[in-house]
Amino acid sequence: MSSETSNNRIRIFDTTLRDGEQAPGCSMTLREKIRVATALSGLNVDVIEAGFPAASPGDFESVKAIADANLGPIICGLARCNTADIEKVHAAVRGADQHRIHVFVATSAIHREHKLKMAKEEIIKSAVGAVQMARELVDDVEFSPEDASRTELSYLAEVVSAAIEAGATTVNIPDTVGYTVPAEFDQLFRYLKQHVAGIDDITLSVHCHNDLGMAVANSLAAAHAGARQIECTINGIGERAGNCSLEEVVMALRTRAEFFDLYTDIATERLYPASRLVSSITGMHVPRNKAIVGENAFAHEAGIHQHGMLQHASTYEIMRPADVGLSRSNLVLGKHSGRHAFRDRVKELGFDLDEFETNRVFQEFKKLADKKKDIFDGDIEAIIMNVDGTSAGPWILKSLAVQTTSDEPAQATVVLIGEDGGEISESASGDGPVAAAIQALAQVTGVRLALKNFELHSASMGEDAQGEVTVTVEQDGTSYRGTGTSVDIVEAGSRACLEVMNRLIRRQRRDVPGGANSDINRASI
Ligand code: KIV
Ligand code: ZN
Image (tube, rainbow, N blue to C red; front, side):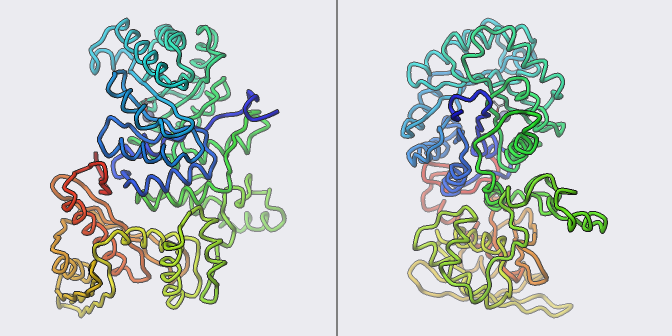
């Protein structure tokens, strides 16, 4: 049976770039969003919710850029039930061959009384008007009754019926505050299936948040009860405790296919690279024990488990690491690896670099291979993110030297290359080597940073693993994030700070805060 005709196919609606990006600390630059959208297209998701165009000019531009790139999946934008929002979504998404307008309004008593201050009938009128208007612009319209799981069942059925009659082609049932539990959500979906006329002619969708840690379980319950679209994000990023995790829900459906009798069209071997990409872009690190993509997800420590694994992998593994894109050794390249092998590996990791970017990244790879014997996937990803973070300039770190002696301030000397190719060197002292290096960078760039957070993670494996530093900086009431990687953690921290300094300089030049061309990495919106 073909994908389009099978009623057992679950559509995957990815909202990493909208609900995921909305989470504090997860905002992305336009360039980063395009990179994530490209990875989502490689994963073969059905729908990419690219953003909320009415939220800011920057959001509008990024949704439009993703739609204009026409990557394959349906490109969707979110709108409240008003003309301005709906027109903005239409203008932003229309460049994609397949596009969708997603309108929403809250329906629960709590939202009606405290947020909207609207009566039940007014909400239905607003929803119907918005769906009708969107349908005049496009054929593909999704409607969401926000906080559906806390809405009176009979009223929910009324709203959903009205939206379908008005022309909604997908109706999405959100568990906005992550409140429901699987058995209850199953009943809710079965109730709607029984009480809403025309529900079998539209796509019924589910959208779960993870406040009680049940977003994936609740989404699976909804699918079991008849939902045919699941809304989710890579690594489960999203508001508060996050959204349903794409990799978990997809692998649950695949691994337990005999139970669910459902399938997705996701290229599961791309899950791990996509997860790495999103975590390095957002700086939201994946916990080691996270299902599917965590570092320990396929690691076996206990002797009895290792013994079983050696006899037969199925004793303790319900999925093959390769099925999610994780090569078991993860050891990829070394000093003598050629350009060809390097380029292939970069592609396998899900990066689509042009010739110029490949050259820059390959040069950095060779430099790293001189310092580090084994180069792992994490190292290559870190190089790419490093090059990407600094490529926009205006300053590039050429070298850094630090000197520390107990009981004396640390000394740091940096050499930066400016846009004209000229080099500037400055030295400074500080309480520690990182503080001294940041001070020296500030002397060259003229940008002083108020560091709010400094996080160090290992980018790969082994004693000589690269350190990945993520810094968060507070400037004029806005948070900015930068990431840097190196085998030397002081250098990694300096790169992360320089990335933020470069952003602030570019922002000052454009003087368009959060604007259309902004590549400011806002950690809060
Ligand atoms: O959580 C939610 O209710 C949403 C809707 C806008 C779909 O994100
Ligand atoms: Zn949501």
